[in-house]
Length: 451
Ligand code: PAF
Image (cartoon, rainbow, N blue to C red; front, top):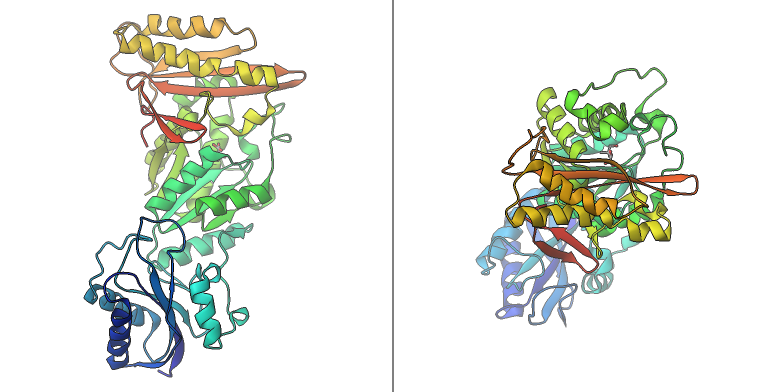
C-alpha cells in the first residue's frame, strides 16, 4: 500500500505530559508501516468544554506517513493510550495521561463506529487548529463532516442508515412530526446516550390526520428543528415531503386492533392506523436497533409496541418519560396554540392526575373512586372540555374491571377552544409513583415516568 499522510491530535494532562507524548511518538515511529514525519509545538491549555476539575492539557499535532489502513493506525493509538495508563472505559473530558485522536487520514472520509475522519470536532478546537496550521495543513481543502445531515429522499435516508450499520454502528430512531421542544430533545439525548448514530425524522404525517383536523395548520419549523436536533446530538434528520413518503399509488396500511379504537381511537378513528403505517414505513427504511417514543402519547406507544411485536420488527421500542413545563403541563407541540387563559387552565389535566395519584398513595384502590377524584378536579375548570378520563392497566393499557386496582395509568384528554381554534391536550400518569424528580430548569419529570 502506498503511504498516506495522517495527522494525529496529541494530548495529555496527567503524569509527565511531555514524556507521555514523546514516548508514544517514538513507539509509533517504531511500528511497522508508520513514520513520524514532524510534530508541531506542544502547547498548554485548559480543558476545552465541560468536565471535572483537572490540570491543564499539553497539546499538539503529529504528521505521520503510513501505509496502514486507518483502523489499524487507530488500534495502535488506543494501545499506546492504555500503555500510558489511560483508564477504560475512557470518559469524555476526564483527565488522561495520553489522548491520541486520528484527525485526518489523507483526504478520506471515514464514518464507522470507532472512527469519524476528518475528526468532526476539530474545527472548534484551537489546540488542534493552530498546530495543524503550523504544519501547513489547509483545512479548507478537507471534507468537513456535517451534523446533523439533513436528508429528504427516503432512498438516501435508507442508504445512510445502511452505511452506518455496515460500519458496526448501533442506530437509534426518534420519529417526530417536528415543532420540536425539550420533550423531543430528551428523546434525542436518550438515543444519543445509547446509540452510535441518532436519526431523527421530521414528517407531519397526513395519514394520521382526518378531514377537519389540524394537518394544514400543524406547526412546521424545520430550520429551528434542525438546530434543536444538532444541540441534542442527532447525526441525521430525515425530513421528506408527503409525496416522497407516499407516492400517488400508495395504498397499503397497517391495520391496528380493537384497543386502538378506544380513547384517542374513538375520537380519531383512523389516527392510529396512520401512525402505525408511517412508523412501519420509517422502521423499514431505517431498520434501527432502537426507536424512542415519549410516554405522553401513552396509547400511541402501546399501539407501536404491539405493531412492532406483531410484525416482527427486530427493534427495541424505548419508552421515554414525559417532560413537563415548570407548572406541570406536559410538553406538546400544540401547547403554543393555547390562548393565555387556556394555558393557565391547561394545568388542570396534571392537577387532576396528581389528585388521583395522591388518593392512591393514601390508600384508595377503587377504580371508580380514583376516577371520581380526578374528575372532580377537572369539573372545576370550565375551560377544559373533557374528551375522556380513563384508568387503564400499565403498559398495554388494557381495560381494568370495576373494583380494586393494583397498578394503573390514568389517561386524560381535553379540548380548549380559542375562537375557532380547538387545541386538544393529552396527559397521563402512573398511579403508583407519585413523587417528582427534577429534569432541568423549567421542566420536571415524574418518577412514575421512569427514564
Ligand atoms: O408522536 C408523533 O409525533 C407522531 O405520531 C409520530 C410517532 C412521529 C408518527 O407520525
